[in-house]
Image (cartoon, rainbow, N blue to C red):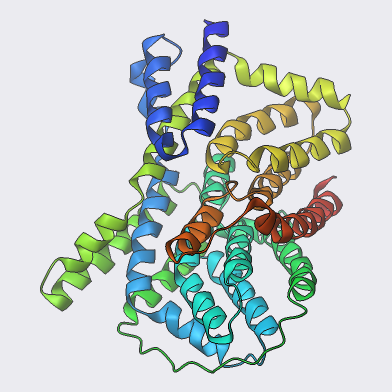
Length: 423
């Protein structure tokens, strides 16, 4: 059973890498195989899935669609561009803006909101939009790890480690991963200023987009407020955060129906819903639960401990930079799903501070995704927009920005977490 589980597990990751468009079916297929071979009893499979995580992601996806449809992100981008004087500062401002809104909504949605603005700016001044869109994409991916609702990996960490919204900012009297990400983001600004140092042309100020509905903005703000408030509730049900997100999404959809008298926006939300990610997560939760039951996670944890020689600094360093390397070539969602129990096992074996290793995992896996064009969904989305508009993106084009950007952000986050969480 043990060796068969290893074979299925390794094959699953190979197929996830080779078949990126069919990751959900690969994960679900692997889950079925594990159930069939007895590694995961069928009756236990639903319990292996973190429904709180699934509900949080589902609810957030729906609210993001409503938010985009309201035109508020377009108006925010227009207001930002009216304050900039040169192409260089516009690109940096767009990147910072992308990072800011990405801390509170899905990274891919952020790219879809901001990238069209970048295309317009590039066309008006006659420069290639390729580096502009790449900068927006990597900034969106970076800031997703800052808050509980900013990225799927953050939601997964919050659900697994029992963390609430405020824990990402301040936890046990120490600064949370929010500050590591923000300092990492600040470190990338000089990188972008240098990369775009020759783009000094002026830009035409855009007219302000008319916002069609403020209610979706209120919903997103209410989501953040309620998640923060829920963090103060002792012994709350495990699915509390998920219920908050789903209920507020339902409120927004129901209101849109009564406001318009038709189901057009509901259909649009359903059409744009990322069911693939939800199915992928469900499958991976069962896969990870299966290999945990047969003892593979303990073996992997023991290997990391052996490799580090029981040194906390070495094991922390290995987790961070191994995650950077691995996430550069495979989506960080299945990787983080696998590594969370591994990190917990390492902390238990060595008596290490668990949150140091959790944060190291997230810093490496999320920020490391910017190393290559295929390392993060936000990067893939940005490149897809460029290709649809007739622009080819070479690996060299991406690495020119992604490599120094990743190095600056990861190094700062790595040092920050060690300073505040190593003891």
